[in-house]
Structure formats: C-alpha cells, structure tokens
Amino acid sequence: MIQRRAQSSIIGSLQRFPAVAVVGPRQVGKTTLAKAIAAEFPRAIHLDLERPADLAKLADAELFLARLADSLVVLDEVQRLPEVFAVLRVLIDQDRHPGRFLLLGSASPTVLRQASESLAGRVSFHELGPFDLMEIRPQGEGLIRFWERGGYPLSWLASSDADSFEWREAFIQTHLERDLPTLGIRVPGLHLRRFWQMLAHSHGQLWNASRLASSFGVSAPTMQHYLEILESTYMVRRLLPLTANLGKRLIKSPKVYIQDCGLLHCLLGIRSVGELYGHPVAGASWEGWVLEQLARVLGPAWQLSFYRTAAGAEVDIVAERGSRRLAFEMKLSTAPKPTKGFWHALDDVKPEAAYVVAPVEAEYPLAENVHVIPPPVLMERMLPLAG
Image 1 (cartoon, one colour):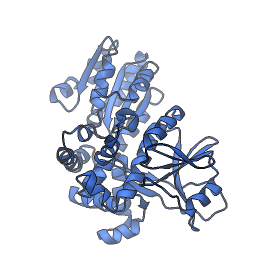
Image 2 (spheres, rainbow, N blue to C red; image 1 turned 120 degrees about the horizontal axis):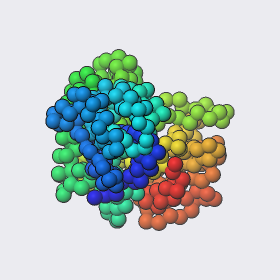
Image 3 (tube, helix red, strand yellow; image 1 turned 30 degrees about the vertical axis):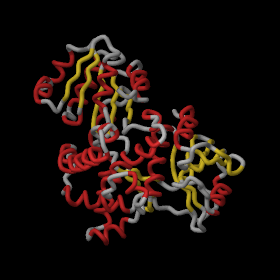
C-alpha cells in the first residue's frame, strides 16, 4: 500500500463537510484510497455502482440511504447514477452533519456540474491523479523508470517494462471504447485515438487547431471538441500563457501536454528507457513530466502558465500565488545550459527564485536565486508551499 498524500486532506474534509467527492481518471486508486479512509470511520458502507447488486439497492435511493444517516456511505463510480445527487441534497438538508457521503467518480463534465449545482455548499471536491514523486520517492534509476512508465499504479508496479507497456495499451483502448461512452461521450474511438496520437507527437507544443484539422481532414472546431474531451477526462493538460501585462508581445496560444508520460510513451510506441532517450520527444516528455509533478505537489492554489514572447524570451513554467512568482525551466541534460531566451524571460518575469530542473545528482547555483536542481529535491522544496 503506497500512502496517498490526499488521504489526510480528504479525511479532514469529511470532518467538516457532509459530502466529499474524489474525482479523477479510472485506475488511479480511488477505490483503494476510499477503503483506507473508510477504515478510519467506525461505521462505513461501500457501494460500487458498477455492480448490479449494489445499483439495485439504490432503486429507491432515498429510502435506502436514509437508514444510514450514522454511517459513512461510499458511492463508487457515482457518475453511473447522476440522479442520486438530488437525493443526497435532500438527505443532507434533513440531517446535516459531517462525514455522511464519500463520492468517487471518473471525470465527467456533466456529472461534475450536476454535483456542484445539487450539492453547492455541502460538498468538498478533491482530485486524485496518478502517483507523484512525493508518494513514490524513487531512488537512483528508479527516478528515470518512473518518468518512463508514468504514475498509474498498475503501470508503475508492473513486474517488467513489457507488462507495464501492455497495461497502458489496454488502458488507452478501454478509455476510448468503454469509459468515454459510459460518460455519455459519443465520438468514434478510432478517430479519438488518432487525434490522441497526433497530440503525442506534438506534446509540449503550441496548440494549433487549424494545422491539426488540416492533417486530420476535419474542421478546427472538431479538433477543439476532441481536445476538450481528453482534457475533461484528465488525459491532456492545456497550459495557458502568462497573461501579465509586461509591455511585451506575448505568445497567446496555449501549450498542450499528455498528462501522464507513461501514456505518452505508449502512444508513441516507446517501450523502454533506452528507446525513450533516443526518441525526438524525450526533451518535451521530460518537460511535461516535471510540469505534472509540480501541478500535483503545488496544488490548485498555484496558477501555472508559461512565458514566451515574439522576441524569443521564454521560460517553461511560471507558478504564481498572490504576489509570489516562481520560474522553472526543464532540461534533459546532466550539464544544462539555459539559452539567452531564458535569462531574458527572467528579466521580464522577475520571479523570486528560478529553477533549472534536470537529471543531476545534486543542486548547484547558476546565478543569484537561479539553481540547477534534481526533481526530487525540487518537489521536497515545493511541498511546504502547497495549499
């Protein structure tokens, strides 16, 4: 059992809110985490709404759940029964006390909107993603293997690279053919897989719907729709440009990343660390992997963006929270040398500290408040800033 960092914050929310929702992609360990949390409560019942027997118990959901007012009720795969949110609102309003319902759901924009509207003021949302560095804490070559396999539990814990790759391939197929239709998304799986693979080849690049549409043979709005599907189901991250008015001509298009690098490498047919190092996407993959680790460790309180000007000033990530600003540049090199554009970007952005994140053994300075740093050391430093 790998301890999830979200566990303590979810338990804290259950002590304050009558309902807590944990959302995220399938196979990231939501059910395992819920069972660990339920063990902390004296009375708990777990209903998996993908099991016909459990779903049948909620034929009259209000009657069944009303008898469990003193228990923590875990509703797993709650997106299978969206009408239950209205029932939960009634029950909570009749007997409002913390820790009544723990809701687990795969990503669905419609379901999340229904939950937010029906349970406004009654529910706290938490997002659970694949494992991050602070949960795995890999040592030595394990760090590079974690980057190559990604953070989905069954991919990371597989006994061999071949087994890990096979699991990821099956996950992609299941997501397209089973998960998306279950969420009410009607797009041919073959089309969406081809689009997903096109995104993998342009991982970390500026989003250009017209260029992709031309290659795909469809309209730009269709490309935008496909992107929104993968983004809403936590498969893709859209990183927006910094919007601060710095008196510069800023690039305004977002950058797009496959969220889990293990899935990225599978989509590109990369089966091992050796193949990864020799692939043209390696540098962009490292950039996206560090971006995901930062996003998970810093949490939603920090706004992440990138900075790029028409004149060539550029830094991969700018993290902002209130008046605080940090900058990050990713380099897949044991002797990283930032470009002039990086230094010009620091002059423009003026962060309190900047980090060049590289696979080096130890941290060392490049300039005042600018350090080359290995990912594990960086995440340890960022962890106290999360919130």
